[in-house]
Length: 187
Ligand SMILES: [Zn+2]
Ligand SMILES: [Zn+2]
Image 1: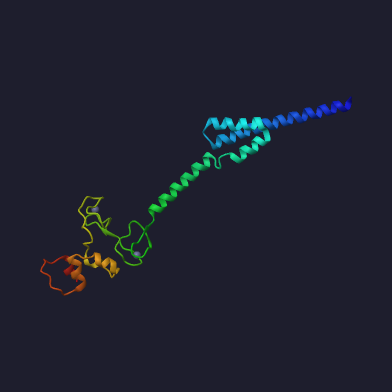
Image 2 (image 1 turned 90 degrees about the vertical axis):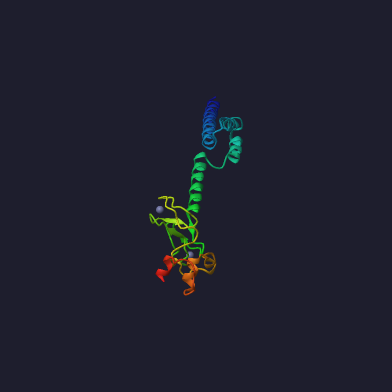
């Protein structure tokens, strides 16, 4: 008699423990799925899977659940966005490939002209801009730059610097019928 009582007690205890474990596993699965998916149907389905199949169901859930939580996915998207912005911000010299900053006027390594200063406000302008976006003053078009800014540079760059002013500055005493520019006063 005593033995069966003990046995029954043990069984009851074991059953209660198992039930508690089962319930905890369902709650854990529901919460875990809620952190990984906003879909309420998926959350209920995951909890139901564990409720019906218990441990095998939990193993199946473990195998099939989304890899990352919503917080992790959000964090990753932020990182990717930051990375993309970083790529956009990296500027390189077209002449030598050195990393340069946006305000650089000349490449410090190969002296390639990167920007032109605004005649009015002095800010660095893109070489292609025809007008200063900061003050509205018309910018010198193309590569028509003061002669002193034309350093040795690259052969490829020299072919593009085909304005009369620059040609005069490089070849020196070639007679030119055009009216004098400021470059003659410099040289
Ligand atoms: Zn360079
Ligand atoms: Zn300006």
